[in-house]
Length: 436
Image (tube, rainbow, N blue to C red; front, side, top):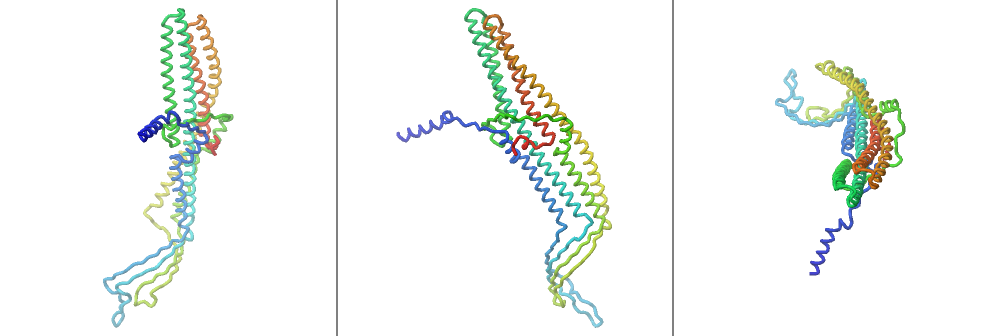
């Protein structure tokens, strides 16, 4: 019995422990989250893998400058014994079965820039991959920043919804008190109850929105979707004034997509030089050692040194075709660069205008909040004194909710627009927000 009682006590403690000791909500700063998504994010990991592949391509392009070493061995079987004819008959020159072993080394001395152009092309391709890695990290940072601000906005809108419920509860009490005093009819009480029920539904919607945005943030952080998270408010950060011309100039110099395309253009230029060098000769030197098991030879082993020149006289038109293809690809990349520059400028302009309009919305909405708060106070006071109507109070609560909602959306709209503007300008968002 004693053991059973102990077991029952442990079971009860286990069941009620989550209620007695609730889970601690993990506080998260913007900088902590940015470090996670820019250093450990899936897209960043994929981009870094591509960058490592490009580094290997540079090493591969350098390989012709290093000697090529071959070790070989073979066994030969001949149907007829090799013989040489002489006036009095013939004599053998080799066995009909023999083994050969040896090694050979070949070093290219000069190939008229083919290898150096290939190396330069690989290096520019690596720069393109590096720009791609930066782009992946910056895009992940922008997604996280937007999601972070979305969650902060959802929390503030949740507070607005709670305040609306509180306002309707207070109005319902006032209506009930006046009904009991026989001043108003039952209809005003019913109206207040309906508005309260409607506001509670909006509160549930706000709670669901907050939960979904928290799950989105956890997804970017590669955490369980339902893990509690509490973002910290950002204080003291604001992007200073940036003229549109300056934003365009900075984007043209720093945007990762333009850097990527510029590097690919240069890589293709070097590829053209590399392919054209196949028309020119290659100067090389080779040497080696070979041993043949042959009883008829005086010296079964020998050392060799060869200096030579290879010239590709005709390859079925493959070289000219590759030159033509590479030139066409180069022209296509240059035209794509011009098109991309216009697209980047449009993105910068859109983000810049969004920031400007969001700043103006903040100023207008803050004034509206103060006016709506004063209007609600006066309408409630008028209703309590019997000179106002219930509809006027309801309208005042609605105006107050609308003004606060617009104010918070405008406030976080500015923050999102600032992040988007810096992204389109090619700035490192992790560094801009203090995560580096």
